Image 1 (cartoon, rainbow, N blue to C red):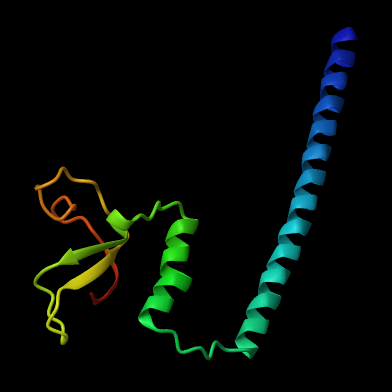
Image 2 (spheres, rainbow, N blue to C red):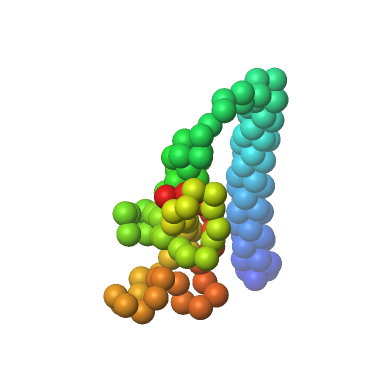
Length: 127
């Protein structure tokens, strides 16, 4: 009989834990639904008011590309923000600077700063 009472006590404890977990899950589901509704409302509002700005390349980099790179943790500095490259034709008769998202430090004199095959072009402009 004592063993049966012990098992009943354990079962009640587990039931209480399950009930608490289900309650937490319900609260999280409600919060998630509210956040999804909020995102949907913002998307709908943005669709009604399209962006009519005519951003220059520099403004696009500043307002979007650089901002997003910083938000995901890139430490943009003068050394890795733009890298001059050769072999990219332009109509201005000058070198081309490329904004890069993947940049690895290379010792001086060892190349462009990219190990072979690494380096992703984000935006380019005549420099």
